[in-house]
Amino acid sequence: MNKSKYVAALAVVLVGGSLAYLASQSVAAPGASSAKAEIGQVVPNFTLKDVYGKSFSLSDFKDKTVVLQWFNVGCPAINGCDERKVMAETYAKYAEKGVIWLAVDSTAGADAEKNRIYAAQKGLQFPILMDPDGKVGHMFGAASTPHMFVIDKAGKLVYTGAIDDNKQGDNEDPKSYVGAALDATLAGKAVDTPRTKSYGCGVKYARKARSGS
Image 1 (cartoon, rainbow, N blue to C red):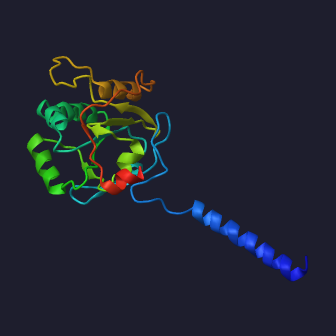
Image 2 (cartoon, one colour):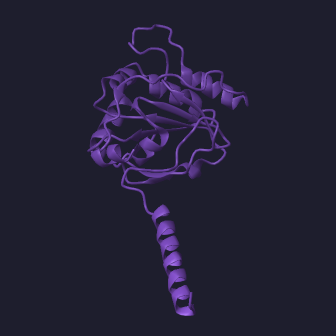
Image 3 (spheres, rainbow, N blue to C red):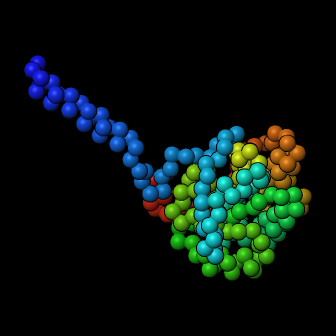
């Protein structure tokens, strides 16, 4: 092979390799994310705005235990929990111990104003974050409202599942799975039951987010 043919062949190889690399680094489709929150692993950082337009990042709460609650004002399961003051009372109990509670609304077309009104009516004191494209919801695998997640002070996911064992709302003495997870985590112990099945309404993700998951 003469020198000119060798140079041409080398150029083809280099260009092909460059294109393959760029393809592997391409931006994911809307709603898709390679980062996933997994039990026992550090949760990827995220940033969302609340119903007043204030930005919240998970990294803002370094060295804090964090509870995430998936939220939808149109969900009967959410309404039932809030009628029974489940979220408000659990939040108040653990806020005194430094726990951060954030609600996340990944509902397609969710309205911040409706969420503000609902929070005022139900006496909810924790922020409600808007996740309109569903990226954070998909990162966590949030399947229902309410789907609950507990993140320890090291930033690791230690619990995912239901708020309690009172799916029907008729248990007079329900077991709080989130409470048990928080008690263990705050005491520096492993969570006995790190995963339960969440109940409630399916998260109504936007079409783009759904197709990208």
